[in-house]
Length: 614
Image (cartoon, rainbow, N blue to C red; front, side, top):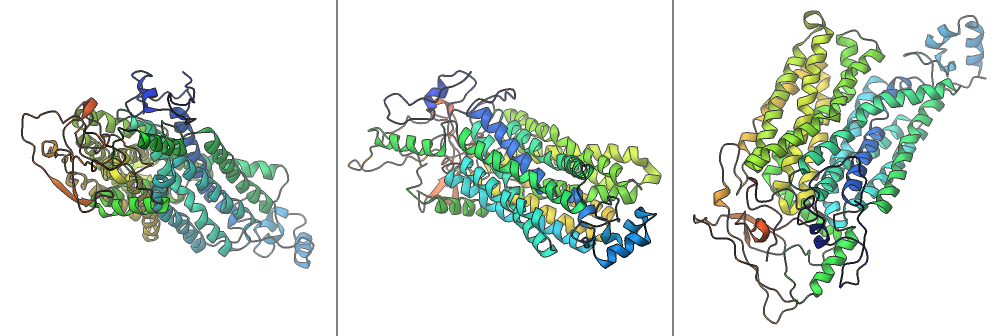
């Protein structure tokens, strides 16, 4: 069905969809307008359009981010000399009968601009081994900073504006890298390019806003998994583009520069499409959502539901989101968990081909092909982790999502330890690749289950939590890259044991009003707090119906935070079901953050986002 964007009846606002509009569309939408199914063949606004833009933008960011490592052999070649120079004239005379030999001669290789074999010819930046290692480390540093901050920015100005701005910003250094002539410039530009790694956080937030609790885990995992495919795509596509330029008669220097120029062009195009052709939330754009809130405040029966940010500047909202998330120790548990799944994956993209070429004596092309199997599992394995999280949540609520992460992360660590112990002589390449596939599956699935938990850690600052957890992935990649200095096989073994121990953090994860893997705490969820304004204060308020009576007295358990809008008040976690079966008692997320997945019913624990605070 194609849904028209029409003004609400009785309102002067134009554009967007009201919550009542989605409620009238049938069973495929919940009360907040979130979609309950994923229909991949559709591109309707706002839900499926946002889904496809989310994974496509992340995919292109990943391709741009990892476009450089596949052409490192060319970038390690020395710069070319002037072919009319005395050196080149002499070399051409000396090797007139054997020009291929000239390309390997240490003195004359600078006069062979079209030699493509490893260690032959010229046309690169003359990078050495240490410079390559440092460049790889720098390429994830900017992402750590950007992922921490981007969630709060999205809370403040909306996902759509944040995504379009990030793509445009990232395209600038990505274009500039094609013009670099020195190592210092090359490294500085790589640092700036790494900021587009924050696109992952925006992808997760966007799909979380658009999809309901029964399917949001699958939506998050699928969009992120398809985006992560960019690592495998760049490994296959970038060398092919480079070869096509070489076949047309370009030199090495020209070919690598032209090859790196096209990915940022796609970022600019998609940024424009996101801005003009998509929406922030089911109700429309961020501006339209703000307009709807203003209309609500004009109503005589306006209820202050706690969502109003009090007219704060976007920077204030963003900073508060990050601060709230960082104060919650559970955020840092997921930070560590994500560091040793996604962080390991990012490190693998840069190290696994070299591992196969040295430990198994494979040629460069064969080593790259073997290593590409790892990235291909993102096509479905991350989605499988999200599906498992959704399935277990229907039986055990948020506790089921914790179990899903443990079920995937424990064997992930085990398989990496086994992989690091396999050798060519004892197990052969086939056995190693089989173990690699099992490791890749559990790693990608674990990534999906981590972000199935993110919305329940700090519901009033989901953007901040998502940003910090996402940054954990790149912090882990940085650590793993430095660990490779001890040798690749010992490093893989050490990372495997750390991953295994990290999985044991999940049984320790306790969420008030929810519980943990082995203990249910939903009966301790507190009753809601009702906040009224004075009788002569405008706008007016009204009382909502009282929560349904419980057969058992529920103790009040205050959680020691002072939320914005309720200074000095210890907010309770959880509560009884409110109107329409929605849980009450937890303040909803900040503006722009998804209310996420904590709905009552189907075994979901009461007391998480979805109901208004009044």
